[in-house]
Length: 317
Image (cartoon, rainbow, N blue to C red):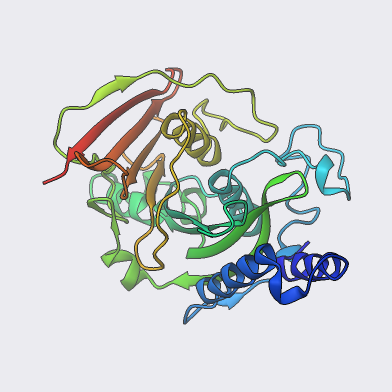
């Protein structure tokens, strides 16, 4: 159900109790939806109908374990997923998976100060195909005949998706709006992923401060395929665990700014080194603490070894 449809339902319900213009919840949703439309309709982006992204191609048995496709939203296997995890799954269902990738993800919660229960989640997720970079790097030290062909390293463009989601009818992150654009290689070469070029074969490491180990959160097994054939987590699972580590004590409401996302994530799968590995780095750019300006969290994992989490705080000057 789209947000526009929800507004119509709210308007109909309000006619039995009060004038439409006096319904604060409806007004708050309308204001948030206007902002959401501007977010997805930024220059260069093609708007995509949400229903085109959440059909049988998305709810496939190859991705969701033992899924029986249900038409009722409350019965779908991803009803409790957070917006970050669902965004990666939506992108991969539409674009396919790649063996060597880096995800740059921004996330902001946009809520109403007047009506706290009205909230939209804004996610921008850019996927960089690192396959060509990996192959070109190998060609500098290995004869051409000994390097696999381009297809085995992954073929596909750099793409950026914007999603607007909201908690609706038992769905933690129901899809309201979506848009897509391809990223030219020239732009990808210049893009920055938390301190490293997005096409670099080095994973970003965050600020040079003291990092403290933090325990991994106990989480249920995912309803989707959470591990790759090499044994490391898939990007969706990595970001789900990273977010769980960051939000274990809840997350304060943060001021929304269209140009300054509240959270930035970089997840890199099989990019650095020859061993199967996935790394995740997150920066909380807004902190409601007079002594801390930023909070950074890491999740690092190599094959057959449990993921390790660590965190550091950047003091406020």
